[in-house]
Amino acid sequence: MDELITKDAIGELKMVMETLPAVSCPLKHDFTPGMYIREITMPAGTCVISKQHLTTHPYVILEGVLAVYNTEDHFLGYLYPGIRGVTKPGTVRLLKIIETTRWVTFHALDFITGEENGWDEVKKQDLVERIELLLVGETVDLKYT
Image (cartoon, rainbow, N blue to C red; front, side, top):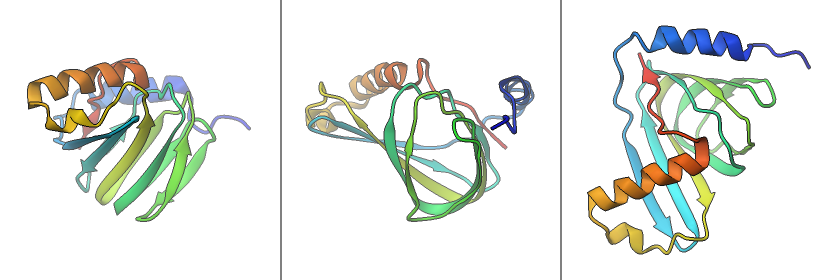
């Protein structure tokens, strides 16, 4: 299937979006033995370009409505609460948040013990930044209005 949106077009859009004010999209991090669970809350009106994912992992939409274009399978449509799916390596998503959305991802990581929930915020943030390097190769922060 031909690409609906090229990687060059995404790069150009990213450059334009970087000139706009950043939007706060709070993250929540939870840990269970062998699992890192990440929840992001994205406010209505926000546009997001995800980083290119390096891993296969499941996700669930807990709350909200969003329009999405997924580069891996060229899905173009809406996601609603209760929708779940699997992200594949190479995926980049373009998102337009219609209603404030809570999106949760689950990442199997054998070095996670669950004890990380009790760590202080500085130590936990350092771990999360290292995990992001494994998942997307860089720190994620591309959220704009």
